[in-house]
Length: 188
Image 1 (cartoon, rainbow, N blue to C red):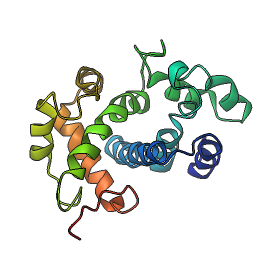
Image 2: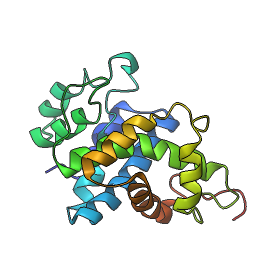
Image 3: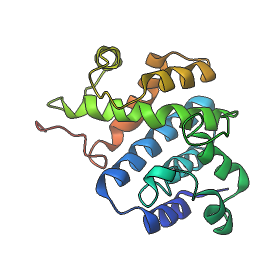
Image 4: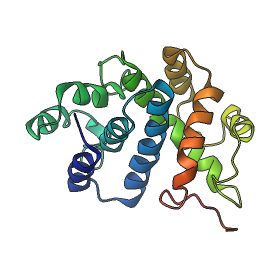
């Protein structure tokens, strides 16, 4: 099983751009919360979340095409590599999310982008962000326009959950790490 320490070691050997590291952390903390929701191993899901964009910095136009072999060679278990590949389903991968881990990663990858954008606009960042405020921004297609809402919706449907249910889990899971993910806001 992939450990968080090993995931950080591998990811940090490939990813150096601050915004990509921040995204990896956002997804990691959201995945930890999703693991708790499903009664799964929190650290394991966080590890997969942290490592999910392993090849993105070096190969943004061929994302996930340079992930499988290097990670397998590095000793990452096949099922964890599969989970990572599945987050690109329909866009840069044909690996369909099947497990709760895979479906969660597929969903929160995009979802955390909107959560981050929403929290950045608030004086207290994510610390007092409520799902109701998030949903207003989610429905505004001009807000964080690059985040694929149809994909988020698809992921939530795969999970048998609503967007607001998944968003609430992720927001609450990210709040304790507000400082680490640069979402404390300007009025702390």
